[in-house]
Image 1: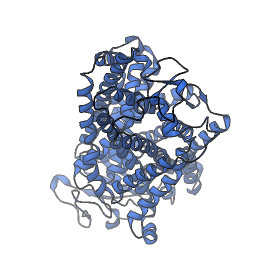
Image 2 (image 1 turned 120 degrees about the vertical axis):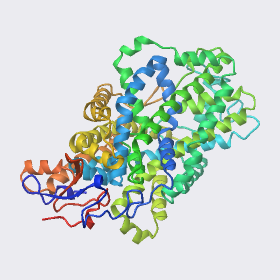
Image 3 (image 1 turned 180 degrees about the vertical axis):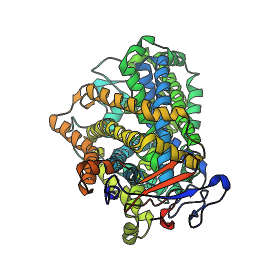
Image 4 (image 1 turned 135 degrees about the vertical axis):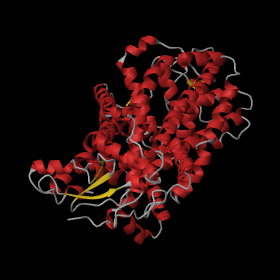
Length: 614
């Protein structure tokens, strides 16, 4: 990083070379490609089968948010009417930006740090920030997998432990068999199980308390599972996703078949789908739709770009984009049927309106849904299937985030790390161990408050800033013309006009609107309906947020400082990509290389093997 801004004189010297002649099936002497586009590129593993890449991306996109976030957001934002803005945002924002990340990752065969440093040296800090935010996320995201393991192991009982109020952890005078509705002084048995048995939660973040040693062991187990999913790189990940990406769908289908036969299920589904057309006039509903698409697909996390970097050059990224985006959205809608059919059944059983039961976040999958299993026949079986599904959904997303850090470390210091640690498996082990240690505060008695604080300031606040600058760096500074050219080099045809228009205008506009709306409607983090964080905790949240955001101005300052020339020359050089591939009028490829700068390690042309004319 930083090399892209060095050794530049007036406007940057440019060396033109290498014009391939594909129409004649021949290449000029001394300009032969050092590897076939259909074979793995130098020093970098590739997916054994392209299906493995597709499944890994589907597994990363389809996560816990599809089950606990989208259904609640849909009913709160207009029911069936919400699908209109949701699908519009999918077309204008989700699919184009996912295609953008796949294209960049596959062409550069680099992780987000080095890829963005080449495309726009001024905003090279965005790549570092995406890695930091993914690493911060994986330190506490694995805690959710820990909770799922805890519930899974406790589901293998004839009587589920959250079934009644007659347990040592229950506060009997405040305990209700069944959900209490809007009765604020009562808590359901399942809520008390989550609060007082699983978490043994304190009164606030001021009281972190002791480590929950049961959860400590399960957190360690969760990280062991993640490690063995990715320790061999794409070779091991590609095998795991055949199960973890497909099996949750089997469980969702089984749960839906069971749920729709229960009394009251129809009422829940109708509540989920009944359109409230007046909601479409509210700006926040459209912002919610865009934010859900954005966060669900994972734009800005660096995971999609990182996984695409292991593709073969000629892989059809458009096909993968459509499969991943459509599967992700279809899963969200399908999960809504599963969730609200169960909520409708609970409302029927306990004589409560659906709106008093519906909720989002961990409360849905660890409180509301477990309560539904209690009244079903063969309750332990349904609970075991459900929590095993959560485990699969969580693991897919988790190892993708860890892989971003591993990929970036290997891209930057691979040789040095291997000299010290000898094997890549040890690099993965070190990353997993550090993330495990950083996740321990989340499994203390006050850990749930820290968990909520980190989730709010990492997954909500930081991500929007990162996504905005990533779109600016690629769509505007690197430019749609260059992006279209490398797309054409890989697929043989230019991208559709629709995608170009989205990259030029629609997607940047939507990301900007989401960011501005989020800033205007910003509210401090809260836990539940009553707990507000002290001011020092809010300050800690902003520090956590700045851990990723700060790299953007730092990267820009470093690029401008290390460049040569006047400020205008430095600025011009800093927004000029390291490599620039453009089509000529004769449809040949013209590769222009800035002189004296960091050469790309892999692309369709390997510059190290080419004699550039002086």
